[in-house]
Image 1 (cartoon, rainbow, N blue to C red):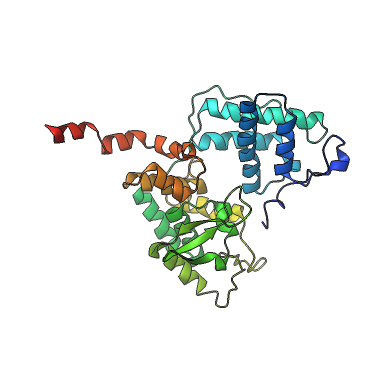
Image 2 (cartoon, one colour):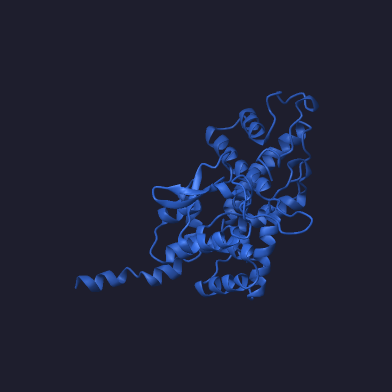
Length: 320
């Protein structure tokens, strides 16, 4: 994957008379769609926010908008549930998608692939799960005995909460220093540049260093993690490859359910921070969420555990 634009089908305005020639990518298309809707400003903002997340999901999955099918919409719906969203929230996301695809079909741009996809009316039962500290250790031990590269990747995700797409985009030269701390510059989801970062602690950096020592002479512009297959040696990995190796490792340590994926490692990062004294803001900063509401999803998954661990009733005992 090279840029955010190469994963998205280019809009050809000459094929759709109603679309202005300046519309050449999904961001332009989203802005144009929102501007044509005769709705309240609050609805416009909702469309912008929810559809932006959908297009970013398409990008992260390495899919192309023009090639999406109804099956992809169903997969997206399940992923929303997997992130901990309520049935009501998922229904809201699907409503925005319906509006967009009804419009796109009317403009002869894309077929309405949301047609027939059911609006959720059930209680949420499927969530991505986080790993316990014991299982996190097992996962790392599994990879440490197999591959320097794969161990470095999984260790990096567990300790920094990076998304698979962010790992894919990382270059050797993105490791640098800031304020006396070693960091990795991050090209985040929905961003056009590497304008964010995660801190690389010694436990995070050392496995990366050991791996890079096997690639003597690697240039700063080369991918931080590259393919070692004969066919694609030295090329940038794909999100599919990283997701696959994470899934394989999870299966090897007995976590074979569909609720355990590469995203579970990112989930684990947030939960581990919260369970070890970190607050919501700190978890949000590490995961680089724009809104604390997104981070709150991770809190909900361990709400009861935190309630018991930090029982406010104990404060009364300290008073009298």
